[in-house]
Length: 239
Image (tube, rainbow, N blue to C red; front, side, top):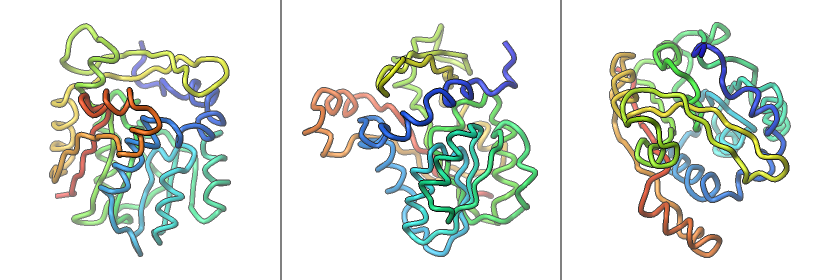
């Protein structure tokens, strides 16, 4: 297969409106990844922030509420339109492919880059990470969430636990017709080494856990995700 093509674009175009309506109420998003990312990001007041792979604008909206100056992009035109509506025109949002150079963005122009479950869909991390390093100011910070190698290995069951492998899963939890979602399984080494090569110091690695509120909503998922991490947050600093 051609690993340079945007594997998830078609799936997210089909899913965009349903995803935007439902994701915040789902265990994996609203009770694990969303709160974990916001906690890790912390204070953003006055910062110039790039939301890389902004989706329907969940994180961009939160950043604006916390007084950040927000620029964001996504490969899905439908997601970008939803994000523009969600942010009320207060963020500068545009369509772009994370796997290609971000020619619209100036070098050393952002204090912080955040990326929520987006870079997983890129086969070769060297391009997006090099671009993140380019557009970050000196000592700028990158906080991104990815699928946890342990949880992803158990979910996708790839041939082995090494390297980067194309995988698929049928997404049924967003109402309507299920959507086959392509992805890449990636070992921890395939995450850490590209970050180091791109000039980042990894400050902290977070194995995400569900917040207590999920216990009352879905006790089975609360128990499962309290034992097996589904996502991981990589908190990095540009060298």
